[in-house]
Image (cartoon, rainbow, N blue to C red):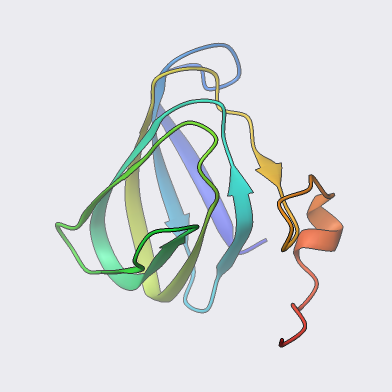
Length: 115
């Protein structure tokens, strides 16, 4: 409910596409991965992109992130975020738990237990 998208070019359901993603302040996109390679450019806002086995990226306008196919990541928007997203193939989304197993969106949105 805290994220919306506007397609600029292509059709993300069937192939490569450019999409504007808007996340409201406090929005969290849970751990997930895509089949497509994904490139993100921050247009406005501040937040964090966390990637498995990679340093977190604190982002601000102008920041860039390259997210390879099947690479698990999550994002949190601290202040209203507008992101340009380019995917090189159909844009699927696979939410995962802490062990990397596919889970439903409903389960992914539940608060994570602290270790």
